[in-house]
Image (tube, helix red, strand yellow):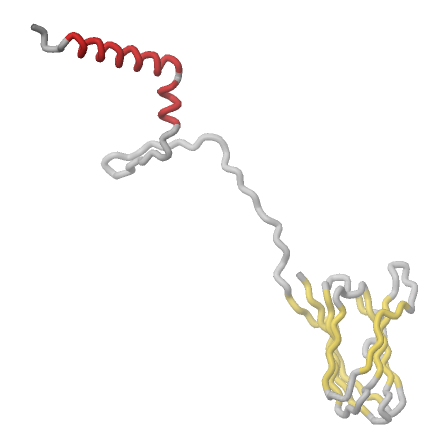
Length: 176
């Protein structure tokens, strides 16, 4: 008698036919593509030959600059009782800044403080657009932020306390 039983030979024939049908119809390739990952061992004794195909897409993000603060102008001055002064007599170009902050320090201060009025001008150079008016309060220090920054700025400061005042100022601009 043969080594295979009659039904064993038929099972072997069916498996062989099924395998041929799977490879002819592309099922073998579909099964191979479903394998998630392939491990390639790259050792000095058995180096793996790898060739890149195509180009690797690289994108560069144009991120905004980190915020920095710069001094736009600064100075010192004296204001007589009932007088007025301008911290910066010419319009200052602030177009490079996202916001600006005015810092003031006084030698003497009482409530309600001194009045400061800020103006800007339009791109055609027309003057006199008042953008803010405020009192500095009774403290010796004051700060005022304009966000967004106007394209340019000029100020007028009115002494309302009846005092002789020495002052220091700094106007900073924030970029980014």
